[in-house]
Length: 352
Image (cartoon, rainbow, N blue to C red; front, side, top):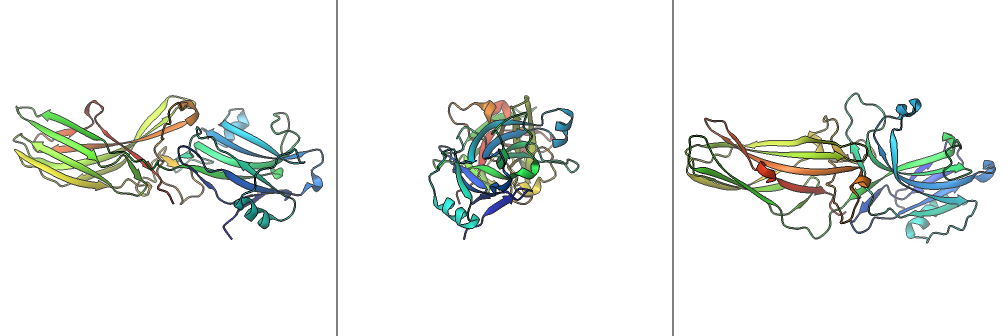
């Protein structure tokens, strides 16, 4: 039998069961959320049993709520009444059948369809001294007992709720395009001839953990010697839901001892692999939504669909690769970044 994720309320009257916790955004559609709630109605009284799926943006600590400050904003929420019967009858799937067999009697299936315009799960990496849930975008399935689905005046006891955090992850489209190319031609001081630097990628999408080969071409018409080639990768995170907070963090810097003599040419492919393992101490770095400590990676690039509202996405993530030439004597640093000529790359998940 497949693994089942289960959470029981403190009162033991509700048990929430899911068959998986990762739901894939295929760009044109998102995996449906299939689950079951087992209900003990003996102490329900005049309350009903609901199940909801909520996508929320968290930008503060839980304890801020105590002093009246909102620490989260619901981006999208949908409720279903499971008990008493209100006419909701989802089409049963193989996953439902598996979960119903596992949960036994008094169990009620449900299905949620995640809209394609919602953001993927993103966590901003906390610092060593940060406590509580980290900032970011998360999805949560919750079942609870209440008279109404959403009444701000009704207090719902924590013991009467069961919840499981799920993760919406981005998969790249199959139609991977050709990669970007950037070039720059610069002249050194006291030299009337230039050096030409070109950097290119063979495709525009790379998967997490996959090496990114960068094709470097240098035509050095000067009398200076290029001593090293430095490659850096920056992650830019644009938090747009509640502020204009945009910041860039370096996630990789590698130097290659490749020499280009004066009046010579150079061509070589240099591989790099940006990974979370070398960036675990960087506070505020965007990661894919975290379900447990060891199961995440750098955040996938935000893929914008035509007509999408950037405000709804909450956090936008992009990556930029820069190539620099370290030149002798003048110790000059020339980069392909000039006038936005940087090479951008899409990092995302491969299909299972």
